[in-house]
Length: 456
Image 1 (cartoon, rainbow, N blue to C red):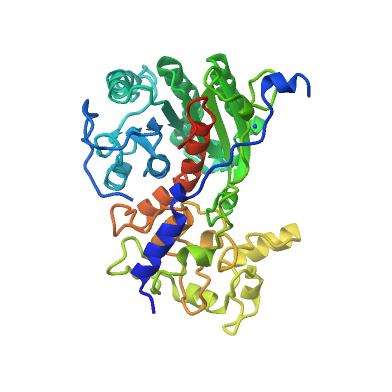
Image 2 (image 1 turned 135 degrees about the horizontal axis):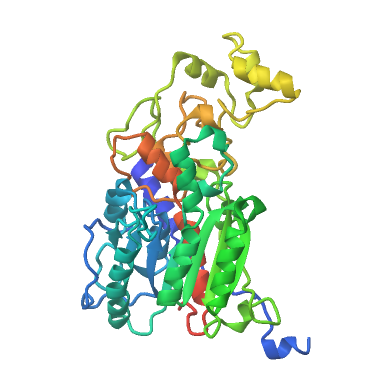
């Protein structure tokens, strides 16, 4: 019987994004329209002026803003890019970012981790480091272009999604409310950097609901600013399950290419302003939970596997162990009211259900279905009281492990999150990450949308 290591290598081989090809959208040219779309680890280093001898030439150069633990960066590197730096103000993500994302082109170094707050320093907000970040980019961008002349530059701008989620302001402190209000301007600050450095390509990802009017038109404003800077843009809500990622996760995608660089068949309108945005990867089959995590060895609740990094499940109370013992894959938590242990439903849920005359919170204390993609992996993905995060294997009385959650986000088995023995901090990194496969697909798609950028 094959070991978990053998299975991991086979899955890694099959899921390599560089094995799938992109299909350019079928689109008539403008003239026709008038008559009738894992690497080894390394410490962060400065951008070098000299490439490693015989190092492959990157398909694009990139900076990853709001990089977090590195999901976007991992995808950009997998797509053949060279990521010069990740920018994020969270120190907790540094080790995970630099230890997992060594470049495979040019100098072969890890991207720098620039621990910077993108906002400018003001009397009201003295923590801003916008000026320092601009100075660092002023030094790095020209040096990078000199190192790889003619290679397009990509800015990945995946701002934190918390300002655009529906958590009630009544549940937040005044400080947290102020932070969220300020963070809604992150895209505006990022647009200022786009104006300064004029990358050929821009990729942005955020929550599906960011276009909601309650957020003041921030997404559309960002898009309009890019168009005013000379970019053709496109935006669409997509589901990650249609890109070979074993997870139902709806996200807003915004892509942009300098108008003078864009290939005409990737445009949808007569004004050559609207970019086609794919809603799926035609070469990626639907991946299920079992496909993704079925090769990991069983563990118990509260156990950390002694060989597989981050393969740790959260400890459970005796009552929650009983609940999972009675749960079947894919069913709602209606079973809780009539188990062999009696009524295990929660009183607070019963009260809400009675008041609304409906069943609410029906996914908590339930198991995933093995034959479908998982529900959205959140920062609480290790907790069965926060969603359908019970393991599908009824012989295992536990929620999914952190390693399994990362796999459902399309991270490789060898992508290690630090601190290795931590639970909540690692869960936050995983739940907040952009799925690497999604970033890889859209980076490659953007490159193919350039006149001279069709991947070989």
